[in-house]
Image (cartoon, rainbow over all chains, first blue to last red):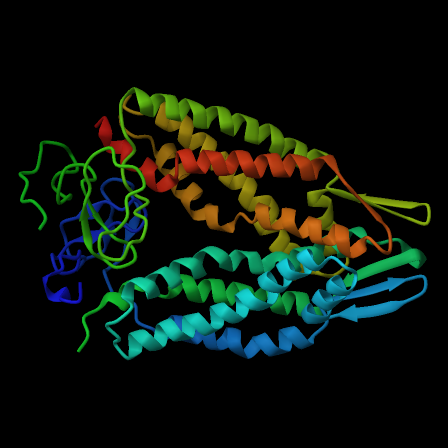
Length: 207
Length: 227
């Protein structure tokens, strides 16, 4: 498997594939054009490097900590007033005895974003260092990252639902905090970073 | 090694390397895969990733599959209407009552001055599901009638929209979020699950089955099967 010199790829054969309908095309993509089957725009074939995903990842990393310190939700009832960050929301759920749900929220809101940031950085580093080992495993990691990222929007939706619903004037009110939008942007940046990373780079020939 | 096949006499032949979808590049590692016809859920020989874009088995099985997807989509649309007509969740606290629908929740957030949050919810929970379901319906009806004349622009557009919107639809995340909200409010007030939430669950399940029977990637090869 490591003798990738013999491996037949689209690129080694001078073929390319339509990004939308996956039709294998004879031309190597020197000129832009339209896919003959689905009509999708085929830009000039370029190999995307790590610049865009790295920039998006850095942006997400920068915003990650502030988004976790800002309150995502402010709750006011007749007798108490509290504001929650993501982590304090998880702890409150845990304290109320709903530890299964607390675990789900913890995985979706804390673990998945952190794992995404860490593993995406790991994948980019491995491409940069031209590692030849564990390529199958790294490809699988990428597929898992692509699949689970959306669940991080969970907390943003919880806040959205509660803030829209709990509008009872003096009896109780829930307001969305700045952390909800900041965290939503972090999630969106990591989703975009994952999509912009080209997993084929993992399989490029080592030096 | 890819076979050196003489191009058959069809309009795409000048551009394609081989007839139909016998050759497929892996979207994850670029390796060329040669796929025998009728194989279900193939994986890339090099990186073990699923190859989604493989052609569906043709013939009568295909027609009954399209009919099944059409039936599922009809049911999904009924659920989607119910999901927008009825309240999603309702709240009771000290004799006060408040209920919101999906679009109502978005509007409330917008009016509260939470426009970015409202926009995110609108795109992923209202616009994307509706747009995707509409595109799926148009695409499947179009595929049902394919082969009668040239492929219509509508069918191509619907398939492209479907494929593009699929990842923006976060209905299943909302359903879990409603569950979390239910427990979070449990101590303060009584949260009542509205009919729309049940309808939304039905929509999610029907959509997932329809997507499993006919992923958009597998719809494209059908366009040339009858050409």
